[in-house]
Amino acid sequence: MASSSSVAADEVYARQLLPSKRGYPLFIPEPSTTLPPQYVGRGVDIGDVGIIMDGSFFFVFSVCAAADDPVNRLGVPDGFQRFHPNEWLLSKYPNMHKKGSELTSSSIKKHKTAVEGGVKENELLHIPAGINVGYTIKSAFSEAAVLNMPDGASSVDYRGLKELRSYAMRNGESWYEFINDKLGLEAPNGSLHLVTGCDKSTTWGIASVSHGSSSNTIALRFTAAQSVQASASYSFSWETDCPAFVRTGPDLGDDDSLPQNQCLFVRGLKIRVRDNAVVRQLKGAVKVESTQDMTPGSISSARRSNSFPGTSSSSRLSSKSSSSSRSSSGHQDLEDTPNTSDDEWSSDEEDLDHKHEVKRSPYSITVCS
Picture 1 (cartoon, helix red, strand yellow):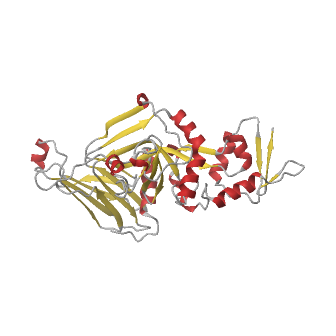
Picture 2 (picture 1 turned 30 degrees about the vertical axis):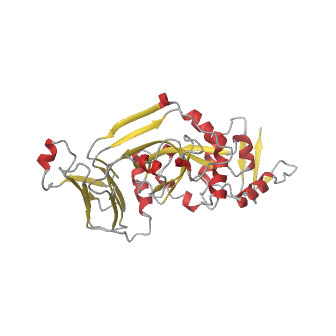
Picture 3 (picture 1 turned 135 degrees about the vertical axis):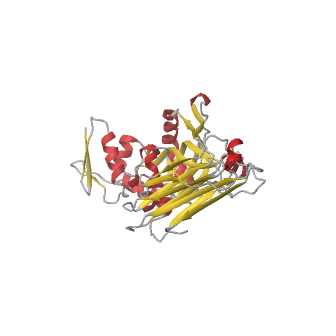
């Protein structure tokens, strides 16, 4: 059922589940069927470079695969050098989320409802069938989200972040050039992600609710029934009494297997190209941040960006900023410098070496030693 709210369902879902600190919540966990079969079989993995758009992870290439690997069907950036992860620095937890568990926003209250048919038999066979859970949303909250995991979910993370961060800082600009200029994807600055970890499952149920100032109690019910005769046969359903976006997956037939390729949360490094010439000189051309540091308020910031690093127009603006003349008092004219977000400025300035003091005005910047 579609919501009448103008807020995108994937934004609501991400905002509500981001506080769980599992990474960026994907409203569309399943891999696109247009991707290479080798990728579809595994789903999102460590080393993937892509863009989070409309609630899904849009995969572009993998830094952990060879340039001619089938998953890198779109090609790789110029000067590409494969990253070889240290296998000993991987953390894997097959049962990070137990069967039948869920994650919800704080406004959700869970209550179990009656389960129909075959429950005792399924329990004896240890089959996670007959999940039938109800959720109610407190009327004081305008947004809510639910993630149910009938089969639980696994977790994997790469802990060698120092090396991977340095790798991203060296190559981030070429990645944007490849993605925006060669492929023409128009990835906004800061939208590019290098995956360092993820939670994946075989099955899931997702709900995103945005009901404005409604004073009515909102109810959701999720059912996941599994056939005793066919362990891979699932039947999912959501029942709602409100405008809501609900999804279940994967969409499989009775004879299909259930690969653990459904990415519920993606963790990684956000890649941003610095536009300001002075900050580039002091801090480097590329800024790398962790998705774990994201806040609910930052979810839609990338969508509002009109900066697309790596394109010809972006390169001209950056060059123009770099060649801006300085006055005799040491001021650099930033009138033609591309806009940067407030959060980028504040974090950059806070991280500057204590020997430098950055003073900012709407039209100039002074760097004092």
